[in-house]
Image 1 (tube, rainbow, N blue to C red):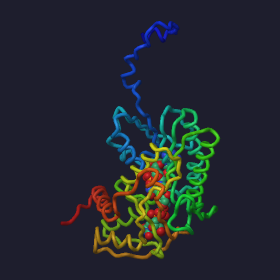
Image 2: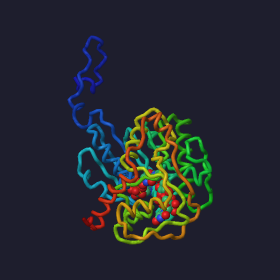
Image 3: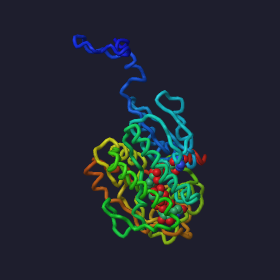
Image 4: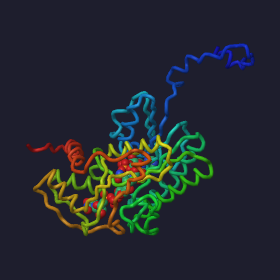
Amino acid sequence: MAQEISNGNHNSASKPPPTPSPLRFSKFFQSNMRILVTGGAGFIGSHLVDKLMENEKNEVIVVDNYFTGSKDNLRKWIGHPRFELIRHDVTEPLLIEVDQIYHLACPASPIFYKYNPVKTIKTNVIGTLNMLGLAKRVGARILLTSTSEVYGDPLVHPQDESYWGNVNPIGVRSCYDEGKRVAETLMFDYHRQHGIEIRIARIFNTYGPRMNIDDGRVVSNFIAQAIRGEPLTVQAPGTQTRSFCYVSDMVDGLIRLMEGENTGPINIGNPGEFTMLELAENVKELINPNVEITMVENTPDDPRQRKPDITKATELLGWEPKIKLRDGLPLMEDDFRLRLAVPRKN
Ligand SMILES: NC(=O)c1ccc[n+]([C@@H]2O[C@H](COP(=O)([O-])OP(=O)(O)OC[C@H]3O[C@@H](n4cnc5c(N)ncnc54)[C@H](O)[C@@H]3O)[C@@H](O)[C@H]2O)c1
Ligand SMILES: O=c1ccn([C@@H]2O[C@H](COP(=O)(O)OP(=O)(O)O[C@H]3OC[C@@H](O)[C@H](O)[C@H]3O)[C@@H](O)[C@H]2O)c(=O)[nH]1
């Protein structure tokens, strides 16, 4: 019967409907969801891949240029029949067929995004344009991982999604925060002009296993320092605040946003707020009570406070974080001790 159809012989009304080709039940004809994760070799991306791969209906394709990510984060999936890994820079166009795009590709640690600021803004602007072009061509739904940095040094506290932010357009962080603001604009313009299905997550500081040991972000710095017995470097004045979300909670929020009906932007983060001195004290108490806490110079335009209002995420996605900072830090410590080869002393 499949043969008849392929010969174009399907004009007889008396014939029963064709039975599906046996190929329909092979790998290529299943109603699988083919999902692209850009930046999937990075910290959040690799945890997202782990979760997506748990569903046997998902085929996952990762593209990454390995600037801050590593194949090692995806080691267990390499060779799996539902998984593909492509070395590719999102600033170049990509022609593949997918149903959903999680667009994460972008260096996230301030040290790395400031290292080559022109490349960072190209990644945010040209990279997002390329992924939107792909979404438009194949009709895929696309989720952008934007950031709490779009609120800049916020004058509203906590930050809800209606706040437009307080961002320096010419500062050293602008390649990232203004880059993400343009990426959000592009997402909405493609949505309004071309009807693309979009989702925007505004991610607040996220931590957990697989962060680069020398990533430069505060949680990974403090944990590595505590394990090595080095002083914890609090950047002055130490009263600046952040709200830290454990990575499994983050991945759960991103998947709910992708699968739900709301475009966003939606804040995804843990509202528990800590000063950097409090974070250092927690790390010291939990990991190494013998380390010192030292005050060092800060970098320009460091936001003084940050805490998400997650009313929208709770009401629209039924999402809220489950893991408290003091429970998440020891989970990250285990991973860091393994990679630094420093076992716990009993
Ligand atoms: N972790 C956080 O606290 C946080 C907070 C807000 C937003 N975000 C966003 O979440 C996403 C992931 O962050 P992360 O913490 O996992 O960072 P990460 O640096 O571990 O991961 C980013 C990944 O993107 C890849 N990449 C960078 N530029 C690329 C390019 N031009 N082409 C292809 N791949 C490229 C890197 O190699 C890396 O694998 C980023 O978009 C980031 O802006 C993260
Ligand atoms: O060793 C350190 C590192 C950092 N810090 C402080 O810790 C705070 C947080 O700094 P991080 O570098 O971890 O992260 P930031 O909050 O500046 O940026 C972050 O927020 C939003 C995301 O989009 C970015 O991916 C992420 O890097 C800052 O106030 C910084 O001054 C220290 O006190 N000591």
